[in-house]
Image (cartoon, rainbow, N blue to C red; front, top):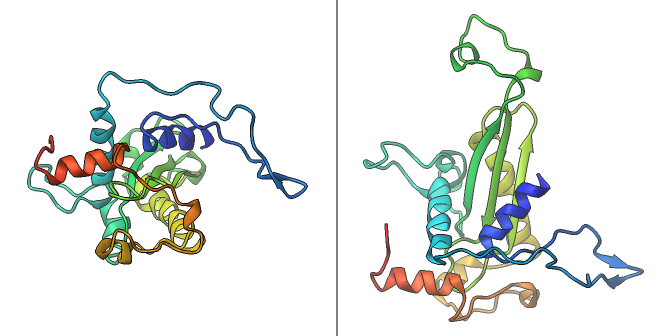
Length: 216
């Protein structure tokens, strides 16, 4: 899960690699690693590809039924539809990991009892906020539910609960106020919130879309 969360954070940061650490402070003094980025950043030929990935991952969570895809985003019903008042966008990806190789017809059969310990593990990775014009992504998470079977419906809501707690309760970001006033004071902890500037990938991507240069 830590490696999945790290990879998700790289996508959220548009290639910037931040080495994860669990030490926050020593004797009350915030810990400052000497080299927080020892591996270097991820370089790609076309930076626009980061935006394509973010759009696709955001559709996983927020895309309602589409005649083109003839389906919902895989996590839409469990996350965005379940919380119609969701005030920010989340980028996510569901998945599962086999414990043992079992054919789908056996897993879905009502006549065959599959041990819970042999059922697939549920996975969901996410970051937020996604596609926001003034705030960079603040958190990336990876949720692993042993034998949970379904990434979107089982692990997805857990990821949302963690992200809600961090963005809304800890950072106290008021996304509703920001929607009407981009210059609104975020909170007393606003100095902890990474804000986008006119050169940031999020700002450039959102403004290109607003100006009609979106590539689908």
